[in-house]
Amino acid sequence: MPAIVLVGAQWGDEGKGKATDLMGRDVDYVVKFNGGNNAGHTVVIDGQKFALHLLPSGILSPGVVPVIGNGVVIDLKVLFEELDGLQARGVDTSRLRISANAHVIAPYNRTLDQVNERFLGKRKIGTTGRGIGPTYADKMNRIGVRIQDLFDEAILRQKVESALDYKNQVLVKLYNRRAIDADLVIEELLSYVPRLAPMVTDTSLELEQALDAGKNVLLEAGQATLLDVDHGTYPFVTSSSATAGGACTGSGIPPTRVSRVIAILKAYTTRVGEGPFPTELFDDDGEFLRKTGAEYGTTTGRPRRTGWLDTVIGRYATRINGVTDFVITKLDVLTGLEKVPVCVAYEVDGVRHDQMPVNQSDFHHAKPIYEELDGWFEDITHCRTFDELPAAAQRYVLRVEELIGARVSAIGVGPGREAIIERHPLLDK
Ligand code: GDP
Ligand code: IMO
Ligand code: MG
Image (cartoon, rainbow, N blue to C red; front, side, top):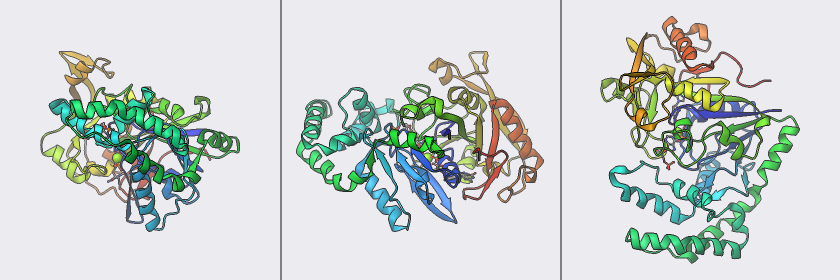
């Protein structure tokens, strides 16, 4: 069977967790392929709220094998805290598989992420402070610690000591902080080994065997298209490949195995952290979206920046990811607005741009060109078919579909697992 990729279309928090959970009922494996505990996915099942950071959202579906792929960076303390939290709520986490090639977020990288940001001052990225950037930098710099290194104390010592030789110079001489003791780091990392060992495997091989056996594999992105290190709003991005291409490198599944790419698009836009955001609102409408959409970060609790839907970004997501199906989430949040503006293009220094400008400084100066669509006032949270939606809400979806250039296969009308309208099946059954 083919693999399916699920990505975020905007700057994250589109509702990927809910969509993964929804599909979790019909898939056999859910693989997280990038990022770490910078992600925050809220899933609501029978009124019960689950907040996941590091674990794939598929862990909540009985029968699914959740996999942490090689492209993920793992904070082991967070991993076991999250597993303990789920187990205490009766979730069976025993099937979790972890790639031996995934990188470990060493405690010194958490420290460095936070002090780097303080050092940058006004130029900060607004990271989640979880050590993500420094850990991926170590990976590319070939001084990272991988999960498999924890099983050989001599190798682990060599890697931690050589990383700290350099990093302690930076901490002490540049940031005026205390040096970090390699022995303490090694001791902490080794303490996780007994619990970790049974979960670690060659996940790429296991996934290939699963696909050969006809199983369904869902590859779930953390973050989103505009936070991707290559295709996002660099440097205001995360440090991993959050787009569909990253699903292959981050899991070890080849592109020839992927048959569909599902992108999650919020019916409006949000962003956490710094960086350009053309449709951002600073007025009552922005506050309306934040309040009605409960737009406060799952990971850091920060209020999310809010704005109208930007279909230039939607089209870009279609192009970069090869989107076959969109899921529009949070359509219910737009209920009660007389008019709903949708950005269809940008104006930059008097020139119209229908496509995402390749030059970041153009994007910084982009002024949205809006089309005003009619709003609706009826409660749509109980709608379960497209026909039940008010005519104006239907027109909103159809116009957006036209603008982003790929079909809208499902529409979210509330946070709960059941609050979804399926127009086309998301899985080939
Ligand atoms: P993720 O990071 O992409 O998984 O998204 P988050 O979980 O960070 O943020 C999405 C939020 O929207 C969560 O609180 C979800 O429970 C909620 N949500 C998802 N889909 C819908 C929807 O269709 N309507 C409403 N009102 N809330 C939704
Ligand atoms: P999910 O998976 C929204 C943002 C941070 C910051 C930038 C870099 O829930 O959609 P990092 O800690 O990754 O180095 O921070 O990326 N960011 C997210 N924003 N949703 C996320 O994940 C995010 N993960 C990182 O706010 O601007
Ligand atoms: Mg989130």
